[in-house]
Length: 247
Image (tube, rainbow, N blue to C red):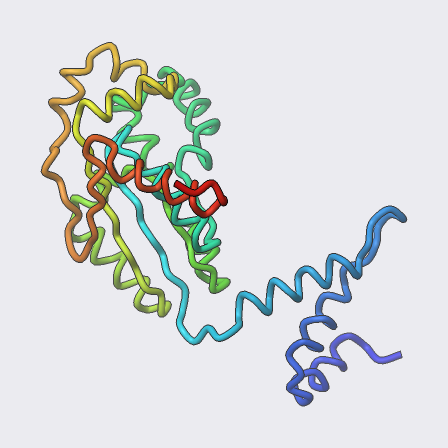
């Protein structure tokens, strides 16, 4: 019986990519009688064909940023639904850990305004987000990142380092800032009723005073005008049409 190592040169020499993929996937075996290994392998091969069909360009990373309640998550989800690219939402990835870390450090679970959060916790949140993105990129998978990015977009050095790292990996970058007016942001924050937003609602004017509403990302970027909820309204209309609802 030939060893697994001995079969590798034969695969490479045949230049039969589908067969090479199927042979690599042959290591997936049924662990119980109620699963279908061949069906799973076929789904993976079909996904591989779609992923590589006609694609000569590298992956794309889309950074979607904006203040809380700006509509950035809705817009990121819309892009994800259109492209099939995975969305990495900072809060979804890190919120449970962040809450417990804040408690462990002597703070409050839903605090997002203190020096403790800004200096000890926030950097780790964004590190987790970016490391997850690089894992996707290294697999050639385009990815959408959904986070405020307020500090990052304000730093020309951070933006340039990110651009340089992406360029070294042959990754294209699209930076999108979602613009919104204060009244619409407050309405959305109030509607979602998240515990982490309680302090914003309790001291709205103080919170608003900390925002630079003229902020734009350093370097090349796009802007989505969601003032008065205009962009999200268009997204909702497009979703309705795509789902067959029509207008």
